[in-house]
Image (cartoon, rainbow, N blue to C red; front, side):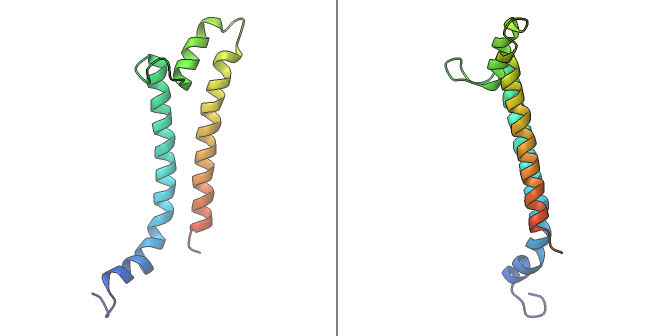
Length: 101
């Protein structure tokens, strides 16, 4: 208790506004890294079992047809890039919106 304020009031009023923006950006970048890890494991054959579709396994399966059916590997790869970029921009936008002036 400092200056008669409770611990909860100090946390909510002074600490949380300065920490929340960094936490959101870190959480979004962490989600992007987890998605990339799952896609990489799927590409290597160590991810989700075969009946379930996975972006990594889609990229790997389409790799043999890259000269004739290039879209089989390109579209899942672009989906990974767009999802990662979108989540990064969302986290940055939320941080700008919530950042104390």
